[in-house]
Length: 203
Image 1 (cartoon, helix red, strand yellow):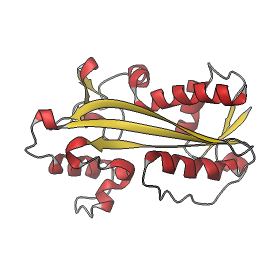
Image 2 (spheres, helix red, strand yellow):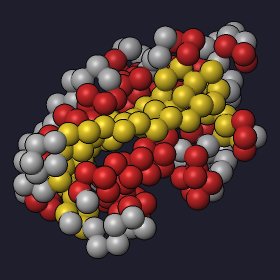
Image 3 (cartoon, one colour):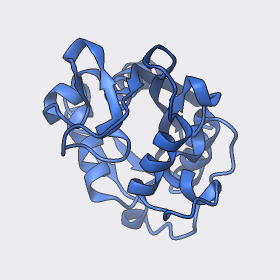
């Protein structure tokens, strides 16, 4: 069985291959480049699920199973922002401090300045969309709850991980091992749910 992931990121391809290997030992995970799909994908959905399906439909043009994912941070106090704009939050908000991961983090801290701990709840969300060759579609979602700290802790992970405190570990997601993170992360949860759903759809 072959899956085309709507990505050109080797790390993301490898991660999906590793996490699906147990359920699908013979699975081949391909990138957009592997199947010659070069068009840019416009992620203009309002939800993680919509964006995941937009990507999956693009990947499905290969004729194989198309898979797309979209993930980000939602902060309760900010009404769910940055949400689907997580990767480009600083740019969307025209933040003068830059438009990279560091700027995104600084902007979140700025918007939460003075907000008490009890109101700093947040969640990392990951949606995975799948389009089968016969046109059937489905989405799954993974979510991990935590809170946003007032300063960075840890050097691991990426994005908002150094600010995201996960109570059961008593650490941020930038302070845990990759195995610990995969065990509870939104992406790990979503991929496990995706594997289960894919099994049901392809039996």
